[in-house]
Image (cartoon, rainbow, N blue to C red; front, side):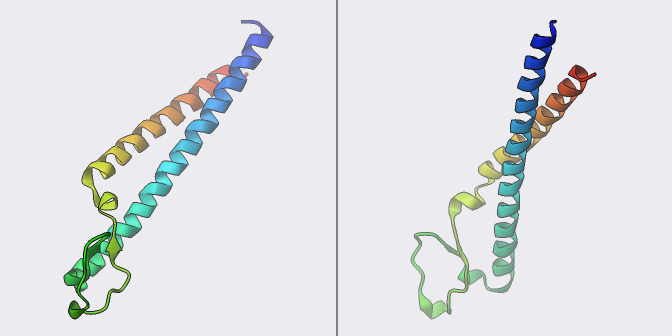
Length: 107
């Protein structure tokens, strides 16, 4: 491999590693967002389950005031969470592989 080819490869792998790290950070951020929702949902279910409302669902004020407990059903979807975890695992693997590939290219 010529020096020019090696430089091009190092540049490409560096970009791919940064992209993998950025993707992983975004996925982890989404996991944190879901964790906050799950925590809030658990607290409302524990204290006032009658106050759990899903977006677009009618709610009667006869049950009491609504206190920030409107949830999107898509946020609580187990399939979405399962796919998110799988994507995080794949992103970790990709970032690690790109890091190893980059280390192998550097002197």
